[in-house]
Amino acid sequence: MAQIILDSNSNLIQGDFDAATVNNRTKLQTSTTNATTGVYVVPNGSATSASVQIANAADPTNASKVVVATNGATDTQIVSGANGSGSYLPLSFYTNNDIRFQMGNAGELNVRTAPGTVSSGTSGQFLTSGGPGAGVSWTTAAGGFSNMTVYTSPGTFTTPATTTKIKVTVVGAGGGTNAVPGNQTGGAGGGGSAIYVGPVTASTPYAVTVGAGAVNTVGGTSSFGALASATGGATTGSPTLAGGAGGTGSAGTILFGGGGGGSVGFIGAPASTTGTGGSSIFGGGANGAAGGPASAAVAGIAGRNYGGGASGTSYGGAGAAGAGGVVIVEF
Image (cartoon, rainbow, N blue to C red; front, side, top):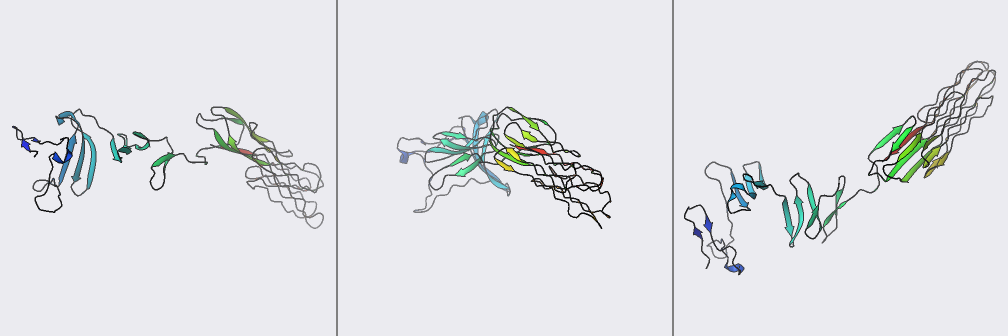
């Protein structure tokens, strides 16, 4: 039968804890027949904490250790610790003779990816359950974009080194209107739009063009390289009662036409009205304006938001500019 020995310094208990026959190893057991065994490590006197500490060296002075402890009334703990110059080791959890989880020294969570292998995944990944009888795994979120750059003037977008898919929204500028002596005009058209969602080449520059809006001018075209493009709304600078046509999306995954400008609502005495500006996908077409007598000068109203068309004018009232376009890059 295995014996328990107290060494000569009275600070080391020894026994046959590794006999080839497992049942011959030194064990702890209650003396009460058919009773459950429970082993306690308790504090002395008024102290409120106790622990079991297991080291990786015969001399624990400079050793790594795992500690199972109570910490007063605060919490209970499983600690990967160290004494002296000992190293702090990751804390691993095993089942079925294989590692399943590991808490690294920096607080990272490592998960089994193959027998004997764990990984903390990559930034932004999340854990996915494999269902009953299967482990968990790191998963990369599908779709969605976490960054956005908005261009209201021309520039260059260079894809980050890790970016291979983007969403781009381009909107052409709204058309502008002009003063027309002795006549009335409809509103100018809203800018067309295009949305591109798809692959791009990492670390590659793409030219960004943003259409400008101005008085008595067709709205400028907006584009993102050759992937997405949209033209601006038409102007109504010459005497006309009809509104200008909206711009069009000419390249991209999804294409939208801009809204057409409104026609003149009333002609002649006793009052005059002007046509509303056409809207883009962001709205923004300017409201038409009402004047007094039929010959009263009524100025146009500038387009709003991105790509909104300007409203018409009446009898020499000042023209107005369409709203500028925009390019929005999500990645």
